[in-house]
Length: 243
Image (cartoon, rainbow, N blue to C red):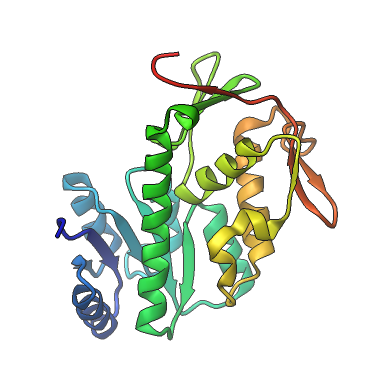
């Protein structure tokens, strides 16, 4: 059996923190728990986890502030764990780069399923990078590397993607000039019923557009096909090796 995957749980409520930690350890994860954003920051500097579970109601900062800081670090995933169930909070969390959002109270098995989904998505992207025909993709002025979740422009400018954004972009790049529905883009995660899948896809498309489009308000690479889904318009060249 391989090494246990390391999770960081950032939750101010000690009872919930201990309960969630016990549950996740029972499913085979190694869990380090923190009651404040400051303690979590220090731990992340020392060692990056596989994934962070972040509560929004932290004592020393708003959890969304911490998510905003964390999302750019592509070494790990981020799941928001909170009692705030409003759609605006969920959308904002996704806009800031969280991979998923789960509202308390929740079933332990649901939490574990969400964690597994995010980790599996990241591992699939890393696996895709090992395949010669999908190692890197060139389109327009960009080269996309799914292995390290980055986009590099011809002028050297670099953008980082979350695992969810990278997976969505990879799906579009594999089917250029073909309309993909939101259900197709959501993939296995479309079974979630606590948040409208179409809205989460729209949020992530919006974030990708801000990174690759010259004018995100008038996109040319990722077009919206109203009532149908999204269309990637550019030619895609798959690179392998040192090409």
